[in-house]
Length: 200
Image (cartoon, rainbow, N blue to C red; front, top):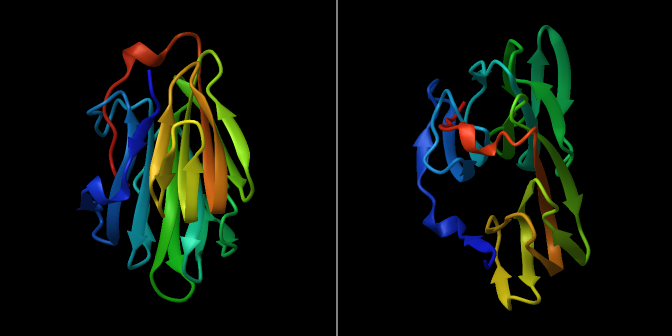
């Protein structure tokens, strides 16, 4: 099976529940998933204003600044400054989390994974790399800046385009910018039993 190409131009944006911005889903497992039963979800958000994050019990969150001056996240009363582009920050979806923008609107990259179902890791890559989805894994590669080329598939990816690799699939990527490589590893054969994802 060939890797799945996910073009940024094909995504639809939807408003957050708190009205503070827009989110565009890159990929979700399983397909068509929604608020309460997703296994994992990856998205890109345009953040226009600060405010509270919705709670996601049992979910691990990884957020990465892509554009803008950054934000201060207050997670269960502890302040964390997220202002360096392309530096993933991990926090719990169970936590009471507030966001304050440091200097106007931002764009961020989000990974949410239900702990009972899977574990996630985000690597930031700036040079040619080989990616492969090992047994029990899926890999999602998203271009955060510039472009990338899937060398074996002969496919060029632009900014915020993505490629999804299922178990056993792989390719070499020529990198002309910055990539996020999201490795999603299932726990105890849990992939089939989950459904639905949502915006924060």
